[in-house]
Amino acid sequence: MRRIVICLSTLLVLGYLLITSPTSRSQNQTSELPPALDSTVKAYGARGDGQTDDSAAIQRAVDSRQGQIVFPKGVYRLTKTIEIDLDILGPTSVSSDGTATIIMAGPGPAFRFIGTHEGTASPDTVKENVWLKQRSPMVDGLEIVGDHEEACGIEATGTMQITLTRLTIRRALHAIHFTKRNRNVIVSNCHLYENRGAGVYYDNVSIHQSNIVGCHISYNAQGGVVVNKGDIRNIQIGTCDLEGNMGDESSKPTANVLIDSEGAMVGEIEIVGCTIQHTHDAPGSANIRINENARIRPHSPEHRDGNITIADNVLSDVQTNIEITSARGVTVTGNTMWKGYTHNIRIHDCNNIVVSNNVLDRNPRYHYGDGNTAQVGMLFTNCDGCTITGNHINGTGDERVAFEVRDSRRMNIVGCSILDYSTTGLLLKNVSDSRVSDCLIRTDLPDSQGAQALEIIGGKDNQIVNNLYKSSSKIAPRVR
Image (cartoon, rainbow, N blue to C red; front, side, top):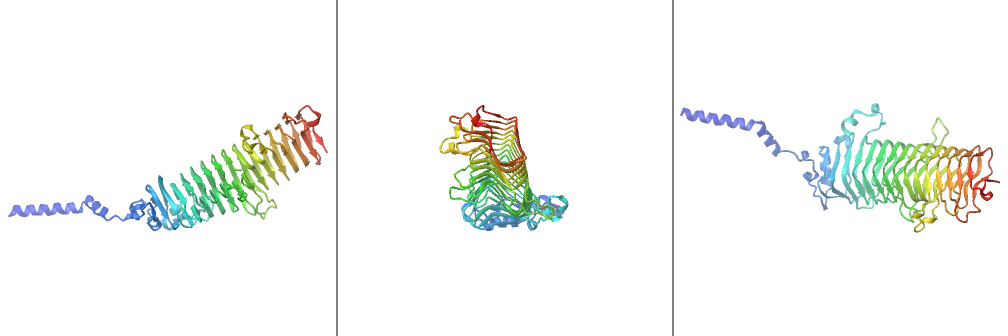
């Protein structure tokens, strides 16, 4: 009897220890885990079959506050925007490995990130709740396809340090849409393709510090990177391919990079190391179009914003490759361009501009179709205080002047080669207080005996020295 009691007691003790052990508790808890600890959207009911409306399921996944929202391989159909209110939800990322597609079949963006940051990029203006709950939202590795005329890809407002990377967004209205106010934005390694609006759209927004790097932005009908007014500083566009972002023959004029600061404040911009091209068939098309006619500030009557560098790009096949209006403090250097059907470079109402070491070519290899009608020249109008040096201009077609300066003063044109023009190499019209020196201006085209190397109309107090022209009196400098 005593042995039986001892055995029963031992069994009871062992049973108690087994039940209360950490392993047992872990097993019991695992069976009761809420779906919020499973980071894939399928745990919340998303089907990913391309037919089911997964809007509610994905919103549930986001609202669970788990933070890491993962899309396994599949096609996820949305009819409503997934709202990501960062101050409520905390730090949030949305990601896949390139195998998930989001079909946006309703109006608005597929994902809208909402923050409350009202400061600048300076750390002392960032409130603690922004650091704790809102910093660095991220979207990575997804494809988003529009299936509604008002569908967009991603919208961000009030965010701090949003990062959008390795995305494909196509057939939407705008691929990436920034509104109201954001700071420290990164868009990298994305394919923004065949959208009806803009690839990246700065919509009258306040943004300082935004980087667009390594992206393929093509065939967006209303522009590639579009800045529509706002308060914008420190845009860097680097090592991107931007192509054909201007619709067709019936489109409104736009550009692969379009920056419009009319009545606003947009400046401190860098466009470096990009290939930018197509298409001259669209009316008023440009590769880079910048209007810096900014809002007057209380302490100065100056209306020109600027501080812009355009460097080391390859540009072609539009009406105007680079067009700059009402800017100051601009450097255009090291670019190679051709097939500007109206001009390669056109600069109007600008101060303190440097245009140096650019190649403006007219390669016969590109004379297929109407390629031989493209012009190559530069045009400066109503400018003051510009330095144009070391540029190489070759083969400017049958009509336009190779390099024309009108109604300008304090223009310093030094060390340029202007070759194989059909009409006039360099035209100065109503130009004063300027200098042209050490340039080679010469045409060896057939039937160019009547061409003029240098023509000066009006103006005063100019210095023209040490230039080399073709040894023919018919193309020597002419003043009238």
